[in-house]
Each structure stands twice: as structure tokens, then as C-alpha cells.
Length: 326
Length: 310
Image 1 (cartoon, rainbow over the protein chains, first blue to last red):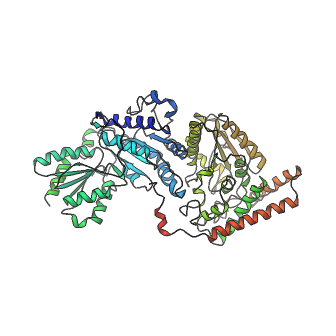
Image 2: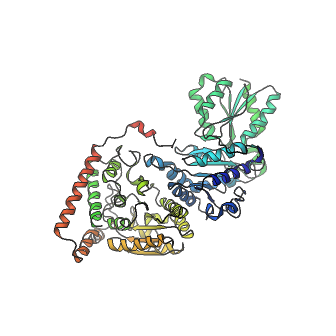
């Protein structure tokens, strides 16, 4: 075991997968000599050279398209979006090209690509460097969507994503890159896609969340524990496919659910979970399914507005207390 | 070459008939008039070269080895089609034969073709990829992003533009301020050339020159083939935005008699050969139609399959 940052965990996953399989290569804007805007790919260029750590022009759509093409011949490209916000430029290639390729070729083709990039706010990045675009992609059949919260999960999930034969969109939370450290095994391991993880056990109220919000939930749970409210925290880890089994289990256990999501409110991941619970677990509920989310606005810049906008520990504690009153 | 030119025409004509009989439910995008482009571009390729045909390029898929019966089953939404009924027309393909289906978002295949070229290069394979597209789609970003990457990394890709002068109803002069799409290649660091898309030998020679260049590692080429579609954008479109004179003029440049004249001059074509070819083609297409019509439809619940690879 060694203690490394969330960012180092991602870099290690890339390095180890590139060492393990010569078909794995990374491509993206400034990923080569510069090592990526956040330095995630630092050192890979020296180790693997210009062909396998490929600097690209500013062409998000083109880069993803090229990755799709390369994957048709057995390569396993990992594309870096410099910021997850820029993924909108590649939307058509991901949604119409990659996600449907297998279906429209009658199951005879696979597109093993990973498109990874830093999402999320809290760094004063303003509108185009702070968004959480995961719900756009979780809506698309044919894609898998991943959003890890810890170094262990980030490394294991990225390895699993690279080895998966489907297109995976992998959202790394930029706030966590250097702030979160954790233990990671020294030997090879993967974290399976589509499986959630209970980050804290509790019997009173379930908090279902993912990404940076897992850490907000953990902090909130300590405060709540002092007030004798025991929360169970389900970290989804993969947003598509959802771990419905684990959602069912925790909801059945506590009967009260708070969904905590950094993304804005309408038709986010939380909306789907809320619908799932309403349809399948109505009889298990002892209160309404509540959501703590950002409001439905573009992502604001000025610090007081960003603080107002983002979910935080206080909002989470308040919502859990409201649920406790039922 | 002659066989595939005639075959493509006859196949396209039969598709039109099937459409009029109500047997094809989706859109039909006839390539009649443009056959020389796809046949000329694909006939000299190796089995493990890749092509990215567009909706109008059914002849390219045929030349590359896709079974005509399977292709017709695809059009009829049958379980035996390329996509097993999941999508129509050339949105599907056969990777084993190097045929990749396109989407309806025009030119979005071009970066994908560049990516196939990139993996040829990385795997040190001596292959090429040919991407087909219309002049209309050269106004989309994916065209420019794809060509830029191919030029930058000297990828073994040949970009074949079928300039049929209309993007659906919009004439080329309302689409771009230049006359030749080929001119666009220069800004990406490689050459573009123009040839008659109705002259099979001209297309063949121009594309093969580009293919040879690509195989030698000299990078991509853009080949612009000026041609004309006889039918509308799709079969329901009467193409009233074009003049009768213009249509008749282009019809007089029919690629088939033109190639027959050429073969006649070489004294390799006579009435007997023509009749024999036509007979063979008719039999093969009849067989394909029977196969497609007799093939079962998929079941409704089959729609749930092939979304993910387990």
C-alpha cells in the first residue's frame, strides 16, 4: 500500500495500463511534453514517447473521432479532454458515433475508448471550467459513465474502463486532484464498473452521491453522528450503468433517502435515482426522497455566488435533519 | 470493373423498384449517376484496406465484398441484414471486410477514418482508408478536423469527395465561396485534385495514385470527383430545384456508356459480353432479392440486444 493523491492514482492507472498493453495510448491537447493542463500525464511522454502520448490539435470532435477509428483496429485510446466542459465539442462523436457503433453494426464491433477529463467546481473556474456534464452522457445508451471519489476508486475504475470493450466517459473531479490522498495497493487491481460502494455504514438515513460530494457527505455525517443521526453513504462510482441493487439495498435498510449531487437540479443523475426509488421502493419509504443539488443556472464565477451555488456540508446536514423529522 | 459498374447501377435500380413497391420502409438515397466514383475508388483496394461509405455509396460496399443479399436485407430491416434490423442503409458495415458504417451527421466519418489511418501507422500496417463524403459536408467542422489531423500526422487516408453540386436542394454556389473542394486540401498540407466522377478510368487512376502515395507513407490526398445524382436527395424528393436541361446534360454523361465506349476502343467489349454480364447480374440480384424478402424480421425485443458488449 502507498498513500497517493487522486491525481497520482489516475496517472498510475494510465502508466500501468500502457505498460501492460501496447494497444493503450493517450491522446489530447497538451498531454505530451507539457504533461496535461493538470499534469495528469506528466512523465508519460518520457516513458512512452510521442506516438503513445500524442499531442493533438484543438479538435475535440476530431480527437474523439480518431480514437473511435483507432479502436476499430484493436487500439485502446484514452482521450483527455483538457476540461470536461470542452466535451460538448465532441458530443456528436461520442453520442452518435461511438455509442451507436456496436448497435448499428449488429453487435459485431466494439469501441473500447475512454474519454476522460476534469469536471466539477469549487476552484473559481467559472462557467466553462467548472461544469458537471455527466448527466448528458448517462442518458445515452451504449456509453458507460464513471465518476470516482477516492484515489483507490479512481485508479481501479480507470483501469477497468481501459479494459472495458465499450466507450467509457470518465469524469475526474478537479477539486479532488491534489486535495484528496488515500491508500492504493501496490499490485494490480481493478474496481468493476457498475458497482457502487458504501463509504459509511449507518441505519437512519441513506445519502446517495458520487464524485466530490462523497467527501461533503462524509463530513456532514460526522456532524450528524454527534446529533445521533447515523447516515449511510452510498458512493455510486459508476453513473451508467447504475448499481440499482445497491440503491435498493440501502433504501430498504434506512427508508429515508437524500440524493446529493453537485450538478444542477433538473434531469440530473439524482432525478433518475429518485424515479427508480419511487417506482420500485415506494413501500420502503418513511419520508420523501430529497435532493441537494446546485440550482438550475449556468455555473457562476464570483466567490459568494459559487459558494451559494454549490452543495456543501451545511446544506447536506440541514436536508438530512429535515428527513430525520419524518 | 465493368461488372461492378453495371452491377451497382442494376442494384440501385432494383432498390428504387423495391421502394416504389413499398417494400423498403425507410429512406432510399439513390446513387444512380455516381457509380463510377465508388467503383473506381474501391476496385483497386486490398481486402484489409478500410472504406467509409456514405448513404449514397452502396456500390462501394458491394465492391468491397458485402453480399448483395445481406445488403438488401439491411435495407428491408431484416434480421439477416448487416445491423440485424437495428439501423437502415449504410449506417452499418462489416469490419472484417473493412467497411465501416456512417452516421447521418455528415463528415463525422472523416475523423474516424483518420483514426483508422492512425492505427494503420501505429501497427505498421501497409493499408489505406478511404473516406467518402459529399461537397456539402465539407462545410462541417469534422471535415476540417479530420483533414487537419490526417495532414499533420501524414496518415494513409484518401478523402474522396463526391461533388454532385447539391446538398439536398442547396446548390454548391450557396454552400461555399470556392469552386473546387479540392482547394481545401492545401490548407492542411497535402494536395487535392479534381477529376470527372463520371469517368471510371479517371477516378480509378486518380484514386490509385493517392492510394499508392498513402501506402508509401507520403500522407493523405483529397480527390474531388465532379458528378451528378440523377434522382433526388432521397426517393421522395422530385428534385424540382434543378432544371431539366441541367439534368439531361448530365444524363448524357452517363458513366456506363462512357466506359463501354472506352472498352470498345480496347476491343474487349462486344454485344455478347454485355449480354452475358447483364444476365449474370440479373440472376445475382434476383437471388439477393429473394434472400432479403424471404428473410425473417427481427423480433421486437431484439431491439434490446447489442447495446453493450458484455
